Image (cartoon, rainbow, N blue to C red):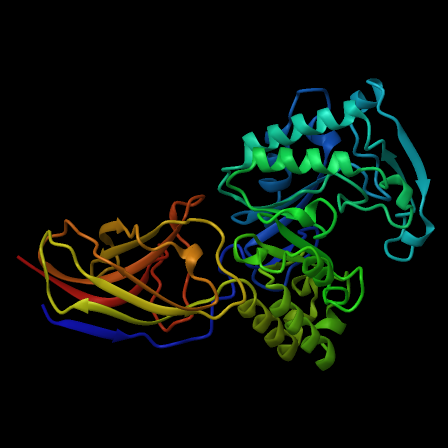
Length: 434
């Protein structure tokens, strides 16, 4: 049968595609589109008594009890020692003999008022590490296939769960055995979910499967100093991890005016997103700044950053037969490009649908040859031959990438195409004959 090639017009990319863009705190107003929220939680809250995991209670309170988090995917980090907050170590571990060291880190006051005091656990304690392994196993059982969870940060060890205790480095100096066991526990408990560590150094820097988060973005993201994010990734041989594991992190708190609002700062931010292959920024991000609502130029720059982050799929052409036979495979070839800086990291199912004139789905089938994880930055081509059971007639062919949480198509394309209320991206007309 004759083939028709449909040229698909480009358009600015969506600002609210899933698992990319801003991942915000929700304790204040937000002024930009976002699809993810960030959550910290203490070990004490999740396991107040040994073996009694309160995951459901935490989710009801922190995920479902917050209107700003409704309908959003979640990135979270469990902490034990958050300077300035109550200790996150459960009391039952102290009862079992795990020691803690009180500290005062005056250097942290300038970074975060009230952050000078805390309690650091004994990271070498066999009781502590064994309990950590059990916690991680329970986290994996709950969240490894949880469709609402976007990414999980390793957390747990060090200040804020960032695997360091600067400026009191002796508190974390002998933690290598604990690091190895914690990483092994995470790898075992989470074969499906994408995980992220704060730095690509020491034990985390030895993992080819692990993602990373830079929480002093973009000032310390580069390769200039030995503590910089990309320096650690380069020296550990982890510069290509982004192809299969997510990269993201937090903009320096309250600094969006500098890093987005000035020409030099904005140029640095764009350069670091590209160099590190960031998919998301948060929990502090420009989305929290009211200027994003009142300053059109600032807002335009924020939108530009979102379109650069992560994936952005732009379709260029779709080849279809002019007429398809009922019940027979329809050979199609789809071409396009990922114009973002990173891939999509999960095997969300791609489906094609035949839509009636009113947008109703007449039939939909999976495209088993389309694995969007393979749509790395650059051009892509997919050929498949779906077989529909629809009656003869005229339809519109639509493409959907289905979010397993909502069970609906979620990813939209940087194209001038109609997106139905159910999330289907309408690509071209198709006629089926008997």
